[in-house]
Every structure is written in C-alpha cells, then in structure tokens.
Amino acid sequence: MDRNEVLLVGRLSAGVEEQSLPSGDTVTKWRIIVRRRRHRRGAALTDSIPCVTFDPETAAVVRGLKPRDYLEVTGSFRCRVFGPSAAKIWRYEVEVSSAKPYEADLPEPDIVPDGPTHTPNGSVVALIPRQVAYLAQAG
Image (tube, rainbow, N blue to C red; front, top):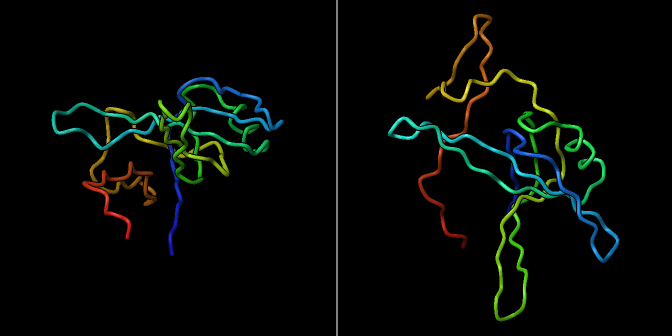
C-alpha cells in the first residue's frame, strides 16, 4: 500500500501568507526551516520547505506563531503544476493537515548531536533526522 506522510519539526521562516482562490477557498502558505546533520566541512545546512494548508484551524495555529518559532507539522508531499501548456512550472510542497507549536528543548544550531543525547534526568533530547543517501524508486 502506498503512503504519503510527512512529519517536520523546524522553525517558521517568515510571516504567513494567505491567498483567496477563485473557488472561494483560502490557501495559507509558509516555509519551515529544517536543519540537516552537520556537513562534512562543519557548516550547518538547512532546508527551507514550502508548506500550505486549506484547513482554517491549521492556518490559525500557524498564524499565531512568530518567525523563528518552532513548530511541528504533519501532512502529505504534493507536486503541483502551474502555467500554460508551453511553460509548465512544477512546485513541490507539503500540504499540511495539522500543525502545533513545538516546545521541546532543541540543540542550538551549531551543536547538532550525532546520536541520542540524554539529559541528567535520563530523558532523550529531540534529534535532527539523519539524511537519506538516496531515494528508492517507486514500484
């Protein structure tokens, strides 16, 4: 069975944009910044991932956050095609079904652990996901 599930934890990059569509729906757009594992040369790299939602409750949660606030989003990966037939533009984004502020203690940007980090009371600190070396082809 195919699955299209996305879970991201990162920072809101900037303010949220809203756009009214001809159908009367409103699409809310934002970007989430997600850090990668430390690069070989020591630089901390990030990805800026476009997110959208058509759900008013999810949009209200994201609108209530300030840029650089941490949030957790779940949704599905989407490819949308825009433009005339002679000049198509392909956009990839996460269509978010739920969002919530993320309150856990995260490591500072220049301190990214390679493995689990334990606090004095024994709990595990949130980790940055490992990079995937390649993507398997869908059957």
